[in-house]
Length: 141
Image (cartoon, rainbow, N blue to C red; front, top):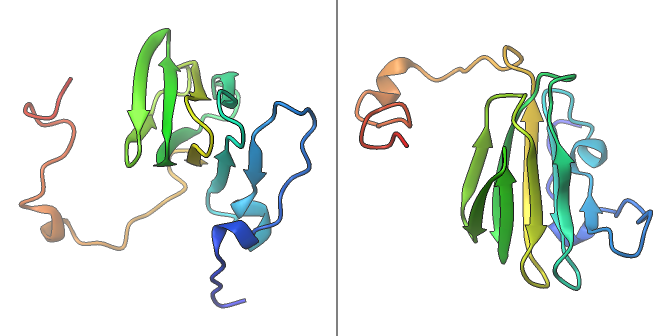
């Protein structure tokens, strides 16, 4: 396969282990990705745990979550965060315990993860000369 495109709803589901599990669309598995993990979790009735409480110490992964639709309650090392549609949550420290629960039916969450060092950018530094990044004081928390 050189490339592929599918509507999200056309990605086959992982069968739910329990009735309260979210809908799981295994992007990485379906497309045969090997550079990073990628999944979409959707809360069908709402108030479902989209991401179980866990850390990535064993794998060493960094993770990025993007709320595609709806709203999710995140807990990051015990700190609450309400993340609405288009919110990006990034966890760079594998020791951080993270969890996400849908606030409403249809909440959809994209999860992407990989170990540091697996990715090498092809972009040149001059592309980003005028683009701020999180480490700059006006974006720092």
